[in-house]
Image (cartoon, rainbow, N blue to C red; front, top):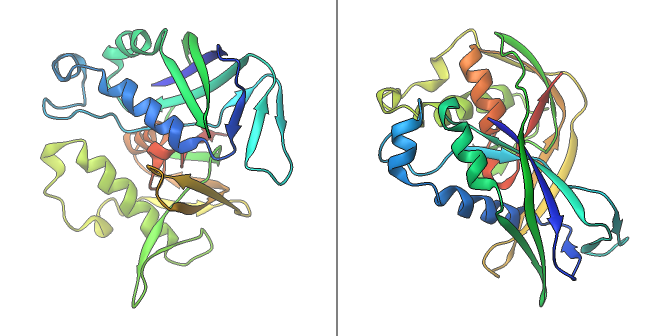
Amino acid sequence: MQLLINLKRISSHNRLAVNYQYQLSNCLDCIFEQAAVELISNHSEHQKVNQKKFPFTFSELTFDQLYACKDQFFMHHQGESATLEVRIWDGISIRDYLIDLFQDQRISFSFGNEVVEYHVTSVNTIRPPKFKAEMNYSAITPLFLTKQVENIGMDIISPGDAAYSEVFKTNLLKRFTIQFPELKGLKDLKNCCPEMDFVPTSQAIEQERVFNMYDLDLIHLTGFKFDFKLKASPILQEFGYYAGFGAQSSLGFGCVKAV
């Protein structure tokens, strides 16, 4: 499901950190956690009784009036309105429930001692694309993936790496099979779905995001914005579109548009 969230700033403070994605991810997590497990399991086509969280991703915030301070770590929202696109992998039958869940929620961002607070004024659904066996996508937010490197551990991988296609495929299949207990027994994901093919179709633009998690050291994650073609079953296309492609989608990575 694809939602367009309309927000209104209700606080006098208007400074947000440039890297606000982690705080936004926490707010969305809290909203989803309000959903009763019983309600989800009774209404969703895909979620199971013991599953609490939805796979999701989200776009960047769009502001009506924004002043970004050059060489600073914050920006001023000088207007009142903002919009956010949220993608959720869920059963279509709980669409109305999730819309009601978001309605009238409040989303807050802190910057130092200041708190910028927004009120959800309306929630609209966006018509999804028609998912086919071959799709073209353009990244709205950067895709983030890592691979195991000998003597180093996990390292960031770029679309220009020869192993990127295999890592992309394995990550998508692993996240998809988690949603279905009957598929958890699949071990050799590299050899599953041999028809699946991933091809970058544009130059990749590197983009770093910095996250301050629980006031600990800053964590730097580097992703890449680019266009790509994906051949895969329509249900895998749908899953990647709504749950995000690549890793760390709940932090706002891997949100794409169909082109």
